[in-house]
Structure formats: C-alpha cells, structure tokens
Image (cartoon, rainbow, N blue to C red; front, side):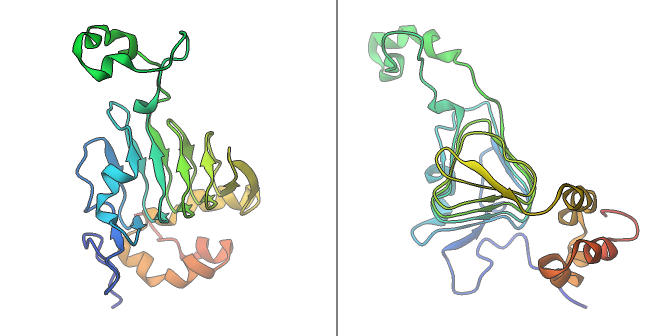
Length: 216
C-alpha cells in the first residue's frame, strides 16, 4: 500500500537541508501552519519565525494552510510594523526607552488589519512579501517579488508592487467545484493514492477521485 510522506519530518527532502516543513518547526502561538507546507532557503530555513515573519508582536496571528510552497525570501509583514501617521512625525519615540516610554499609549492603540490568513495549496514565488491583514485564497499563486497589499481570490495569480490580479487559474465554475472537493482535507492515505490526479488531472477526474464519504 502507498505510504504518505511524513508530515512531522523537519527536512522532508533527503540531502536538502534548505527545505523545511513549517508545522514541526514553528513554536510561536501566534503562527499556525498546516501539514506539508514548506519553506525553501539555502541560508537558514529554520530561522523562518524570526527572519520571515517580521514585526510580529501580536495579538494578530499568521495562519497558513496545508500544502503551501514558500520560495526563498517569502516574508510576512505583521501589524507591529505600523507607525502613527496622523502627527508631524512617524518616529516611534516610546519604543526607544527612557522617559519617552511614558508615552507608550501613543503607539499601543494603533489600528490593525487583523490576522494574516493564507489558504491551502498556495505557491509563493522568490522574494514575495505579504502585508498585514491580507487574506490569500486557496490555490493562489504569488509571483516572485510581488508585494501583496490586498486580498487574493481563490486560484488567483497576482504579481507586481503593489500586486495586481493577473488572471485566475480556472473559470468560476471550476473554482467552485475544486473548493467543494477540497482535496487538501482528504485523508493522507487517499491523497497518496491520487497524487497524479491532484497534480495533473482534470477537475472531472479530481471530483471522481474524492472519497466516497466526503473530505474525510
């Protein structure tokens, strides 16, 4: 019987320490990652939480779904990067200490955009950046170097700075059908049996391959 890949293995590719599965790596309670989502970096992929998730002081969360592929340099800018813009200066004086810290109320109530949420089966190209509070739909593709400042639809392809929708990968009807199938929620054993259909099949074939009892 086919055996699924191990979702708890930090380095899933033999001889390639540059690739890490994120779920067994992350420790922050503010980051949630689904099984099999991975990050690829030739320098130090295990530093993902500090090098790739920036200004993450909370309480907002970063949520990444299952089966996402994050290219080298993919970064998530969190709400802690915000500065006041309604006064003469944007400089965050209270964070520098001394008696300036007495004015921490000036920055503690800055408006945030909420959690940053990434769906399942999302591909991030090299050097892409996601701004605070963005929601990226299932099956989306983020082009290399893109700066994502707004929500991305399911199966959308975006690129540029700021990122714009280039096109959608499938028509509206097929997108709805694939969202209903939600192959990423199938049991790992069932996914293993139908890898070729998931990667290269038609929408009809994907629907036909779905578990009889639903998502599992």
